[in-house]
Length: 135
Length: 135
Length: 135
Length: 135
Image 1 (spheres, rainbow over the protein chains, first blue to last red):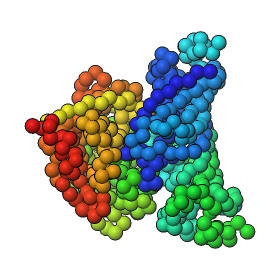
Image 2 (cartoon, helix red, strand yellow):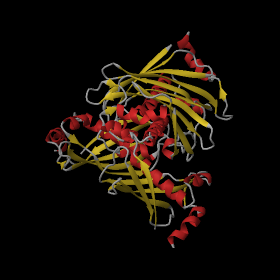
Image 3 (cartoon, rainbow over the protein chains, first blue to last red):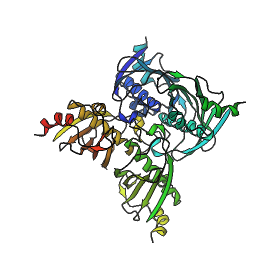
Image 4 (cartoon, rainbow over the protein chains, first blue to last red):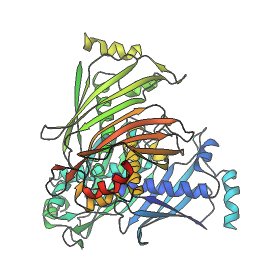
């Protein structure tokens, strides 16, 4: 199990007329979380695409508890609990500036061979980088 | 049980470099679906806010099967299976232009009293409009 | 000179905490306007890309007068005043539901050959379709 | 004249099927630039709203030269050339990771009294903070 935290600032563009982040912006926040998770282990997502692997999202789930407001510095915590196989699941938490949980969710990504457009197994290059953290 | 269908066009803004709609745009598409569902029964969402009721999203879940491409005319099918009580659940389907299922999901909205900011029951005015469809 | 009007509904996703459409959504609205303009003359933008022509935006300019609110049915009026040559300029107006001008602007698109990635002249296929409207 | 630079990472959500940042995301990038400019002088934009001043955008202009790609670390350079009066103009530049100019533009914001909803002069509290930099 591995976790990574990344902070982002809530922008005016993200807040709706209720005064809180619009629910539709969290998938983008979650994308930022998993991209920074992968960067932190030395395997930026871009490298996956460079190696001919695409990772479309297979499913997402979010439970909303509280919502951040404009200009809050929120924390995106990304956790991978199991070594990727046919897919990879990122467990996501967004924390308000005061540390309280704003929402939690899971995103599952498939691995697709960009040439054949067929689903595949997680590439060995990625597993090599992750394995030391899971043993 | 009530269903409503609404068509929207996929815009350039919505498509990522894989050539398909970015997964983060579906919450907005789902919002359009439920707004048009409510308009179709004669109770536009705006009326809820005018009556002092806010409906923050409590949870969302999406399973992705296929993704639409630029300029496709997609169909958003919104279904409500149960009369709202402490919350309302919208069952969502997005269909490609060729009729195949792109993704399916559920969005649950809470009812919150805008004055007290406490959760409440679905307002009677909304239930009045929906009841005939559920008996 | 040719004009085309297209109506869209303002969505919750588009409105910020001032209660009006966030200024950053108009480029998307303008994209919708010019896409529907092109569709109306029988030359959907997609066909340009299918013919190997890309149209990156070279410049945009918007003057904001008033802003629409949630759920307004706004009108996007797109006007082309001159036959495209090395670029095409779309003159844009967004009208509130009450008919008042919300904002006005111009977007200039270049033509780029997708193979060579060099700027080019407007493709003859597009000009053929537009010429009858400009004589 | 004052300048401030702030770096952001281009996200998957921001890139269209041409493989470059969609032109409609720059207003959001520009918003980030001016928000960080104001924070750097000790006057976060939020404080303006707390003091009852709203700053709707009056106009925007962008000239696009090059576009960043996915995962680039771009620099937003925000410059204010004149002390705000009835409005404030932010001169914007976005630089690619390689330092080349991606685009340049100007955004002019009005000052509006949130109570009366009438345009007003830049608040004295903001001018106090800015003046030392302009003398």
